[in-house]
Length: 178
Ligand SMILES: [Zn+2]
Image 1 (cartoon, rainbow, N blue to C red):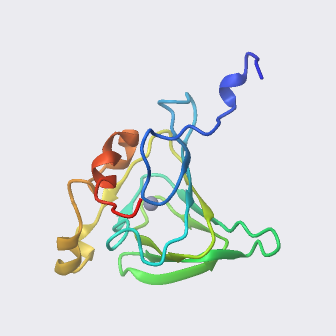
Image 2: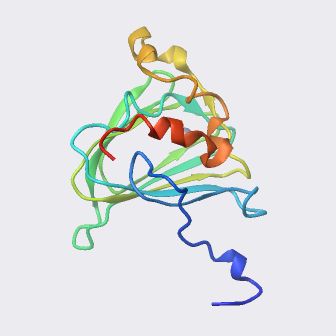
């Protein structure tokens, strides 16, 4: 394929190292694709235990976010093939989803921890932030002291997710089974 609009065809472009959840399809924002909002698309491969301690801790974004959890069984597209835990609101109300689900996160709405508890069939995760750059503010004070102690706050810090892949290797270095 060649043509003057080829730049609009975004293909698989993973970072040169493995990711905690599974193969990364692509991650981009307006810095890499001018005019584009933030998108992050990856697989989640089977696991028995959560891959993250606690999960992605409570945080909010300046823009609305969509967290798309997409099951891959064509005979039962409703089934996610996984159990994903997510807490919603400052009271951290807990939900567990097992079906293909899009979670809408309004601007400035606190959400997390987000943590896939187990996965029996690979599924696809698509994160959309409806802004040209990913913004993020964490709320560690909503977690217990014990939970806070188990997380690496050098990694989970405000705006870290807008730094692209550059922050991931150290984080990934702690994963033993991949
Ligand atoms: Zn979020």
